[in-house]
Image 1 (cartoon, one colour):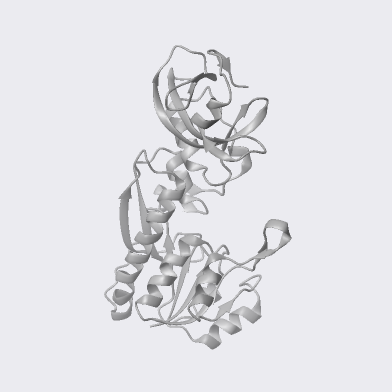
Image 2 (cartoon, helix red, strand yellow):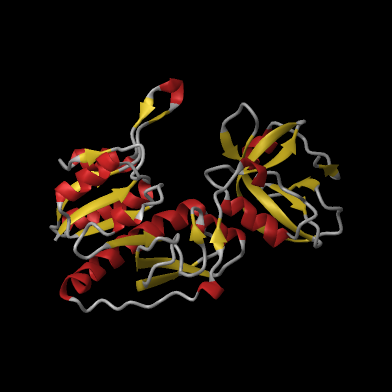
Length: 307
């Protein structure tokens, strides 16, 4: 099938790679413009890097609402457009160009978690299951008819990085299975129930500070949900430290925010009388390290209270 692919981050690379390996004719890859990285050097999106490595034509319009990229898309004459974490809201004129329309690989079980950060929000909310949905794209954000769904559990060992990687591969696999059904007309269409929808808003740095009066499970989920960005943070040695990894602890009589050295790392009391054990952190201006290594250079007095 002649396909135009639209995507930007690592999550989307898995789907583009699978389409290429399945032998589809990728007539164009649309991705976001390069952005300044370290030392202001422009950094290409992962999708661009992969597309160029396999000889696919790449286009990086500032906006798909302009007439020029729309005309370009029409000239490519795709039979199907596949979108995965592209990063732009597409107008109806763009969605309607291909013969079979446009489909999206979305990292949630729709209609829950429409929007930009479905993986992070599912972990933050303590969900035990998530998945990927292939849907027909419509004018309203992530509200088109569902074609297929693949589910996976969210385990206590998962964080946003591990779940991103797993869902990227699940999405690629499901996409591979779904496109033949679209081509031969056997793909089902199930309307979403808008009343059951939830919205997964973009993440922000304002979400980072840990509030120790919250329950331990909520703190644990916050830490898992916010890696690698913006990362949960806490005050340590009078500075802000990023918390990269933690485990659930046990019961405590300490006041919320009380910090103690433990065998597994730094144990912190939460508002429900339980603890989380911080096992990996990064002090301001320092490197990411195991909490045990951080403790080796310091004596944490019992009863130390985090600010």
